Image (cartoon, rainbow, N blue to C red; front, side):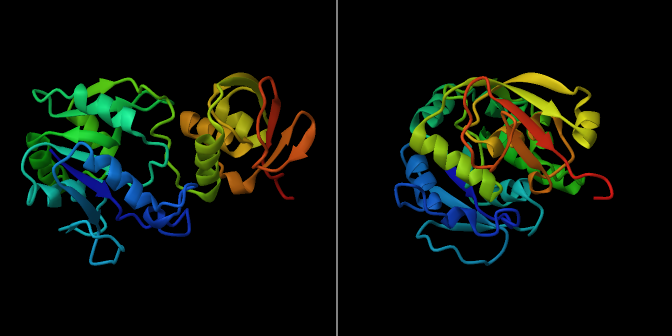
Length: 271
């Protein structure tokens, strides 16, 4: 089995190359992901959308269709790699050996793919998945048919779906807020908690309720909002909101405690 680390995204929301971010232990993210993959795979490749430069000694596979996303990376890898392919997003800061071992041990070679359920919405997670050779060939057909969504493509393969042994292992980081959340999880651990969340104005309309109890693995107020935003597809970006905790305005970095009261406050119309 070979591995492909997806590092060709624009990282626009993060504002810097995610693969080169320094982890709390001082290692670069791409080196960390590569070291995990090397424990299980014969060869580890890095996928890039074009001839951009990433400081790594790993072999590079550039997209035959630049800018077409992860499915294009699968198409390009199929030209070079034989056999099953372990695909990993470069922004999986919480991924660890136990999770990869569980995926590989439970791989079903008779299926087209083996993957994990996302812990928040229970759908297939395409960026930590083993794709069988037949699936790689179908990537070409999917692109030709205009398919660009990696998750929809994976779901079309009817993959074997596994439960995560460590629930937060595939939490990714697309923004500085999410990166800080991941690093706090890494350094301080994860404590499941239940908090009361209240919504106002546009958020109340989008969610359909004014308040609810939420079970969460989030450490910070920002992490909580991003969990809820992903789960319910809320329309507002975090930077347009304010947050109050237990009746006081708070910073998004504020650590949560069990039974906190959280209020997400959208901008006032005309204000």
